[in-house]
Image (cartoon, rainbow, N blue to C red):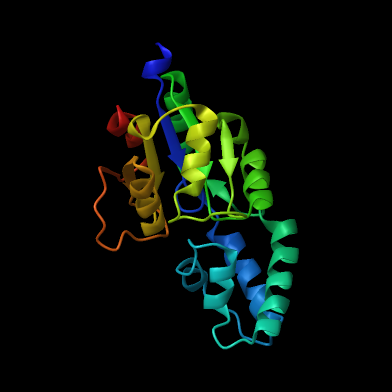
Length: 213
């Protein structure tokens, strides 16, 4: 394979590679409890995930003042920093799918709106960190901004026309389009596509290598 044949697959994290709903819900409810608010069901908290920690906290504490929200964010991060790997797991078929792509010569990256420290800790805990040439968290530009994807493409020296963005949420589709990549939407995640078109759709992780070929 020549350098002109090398391709890049950029993955979202939460809802695409990993199921983190239990740990996010626990931290989200700790944040709510810090303001005297009752706990929400896991599914309710999961429905708020996908646009970064600040947006998650806004949705969890819609009536909070800026000072209260800062207090809730501090509680969220303090809890999640310790417990972000308690129940988070890779979705079925993800490790084998990543190995198959790497074995076929693909370079792999992660673009996530989750803060960098949590993203790296989760990937390392699950033994997946070694799969990726670069992991870019949500401490700078966040999807749907294409900045994360552009940074990974520059790092990997692979242009948009040889790059796919793979994720479960509308922000992944929008970021991929803005970056000039093709886009694959994952049905199993916690996000939604809001009617946005994708170049491919996967029902299971093991389908991805065949869809990208």
